[in-house]
Amino acid sequence: MITIALPKGALLSDSIALFKQIGLDFTAFLDSSNRQLQISDPTNTAKALLVRAQDVPVYVEYGQAQLGIVGYDVLLEKTPKVANLADLKFGACRMSVAVPAKSPYRSSIELPPNGRVASKFVHCAEDYFRRLDIPVEIIPLYGSVELGPITGMSDAIVDLVSTGRTLRENGLVEIDVLFESTARLIAHPLSYRLNLDHLDQWVNKLRQINLKPVA
Amino acid sequence: MITIALPKGALLSDSIALFKQIGLDFTAFLDSSNRQLQISDPTNTAKALLVRAQDVPVYVEYGQAQLGIVGYDVLLEKTPKVANLADLKFGACRMSVAVPAKSPYRSSIELPPNGRVASKFVHCAEDYFRRLDIPVEIIPLYGSVELGPITGMSDAIVDLVSTGRTLRENGLVEIDVLFESTARLIAHPLSYRLNLDHLDQWVNKLRQINLKPVA
Image 1 (tube, each protein chain N blue to C red):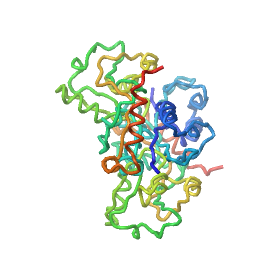
Image 2: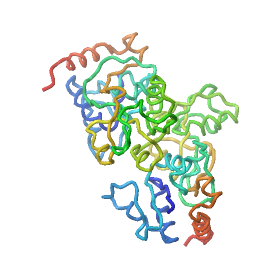
Image 3: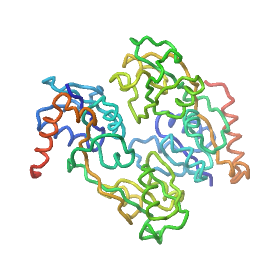
Image 4: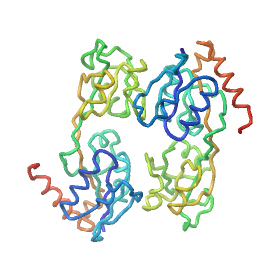
């Protein structure tokens, strides 16, 4: 029996819809009264773990789950040792640099030398500014990154943007995009190579669905 | 005007009650419809920021807040450059090692060499096992650490325990305590040393309240 790691949050409902199309029903995770973190589908064909998005690649890397769904942003930030099998196309967002609308900066290279950038994605942000050869100080935050510029703690932020509503509500504007992100299907490399539990059948089914045009 | 960083979550209501006793009213943060992350008290004497517990020391270290309230566990994990001014006595919990009740281990030193320990508190866990001279692999997780042993990914966890309910519900038992934790009053070192905005008056008021016996 295969185990699939599913991410809490924004990608969960689309992930569950995807597996439903290949006959695996994990809709119990969408029930607001659900407290279980581990369930089997009703046909007892597969198990699913409900974990934080950042923890999905951990369970897959250690082989506790053979498959997982996670945003490309998490893969770039954590660089886990997992096989990145397919772009699932949903959960589109982008990793962006944003600054206060009233600031003079309109692109990353205009940021002041040794400026401060608040981010939950410390490695992505460090890597981006290193490539640009701009020396900045990254301030690691866990939540509400938009408070960085509002309080004056940082000149800019690097954060995931989907609708842009949070930025607008906080008087911030995007000035550069690091990369676009979507949900990815990942696998435990050894299980995938050895094709344990006929993993390839599940992966092929998921890939076929994914090639269909979106309704 | 001073700014105070308050932690979302378990310590928030006690933190707000504490400041209310010295005349600063931030109860607006307890309103479930509140979306603001930055408010002034009604007398315009002080501002408060509502941030993740782990971010409180960041705002205080960078001087965006002169005072903050945060759990001792966060101070030990992040070792921020802040002044630790007072033990506020509330929010008591402990950082513990826990294992499945059905496992043979009943103390940390019985854990298997190169065993795996899942934790959100990677530095605390590493430091603890290094002092015991037990080589373990720490698996960093962001949430639901109890899934580590349940799925078989780890032999043990290091996590904060208050009532112990989560451990019991997941068939885990505490086998060792790393340290006890309570809420701490922290300050921006330079602001405190220079006594900016008469910071000492606020700190003394908080300390006096804190010395009163708990009702």
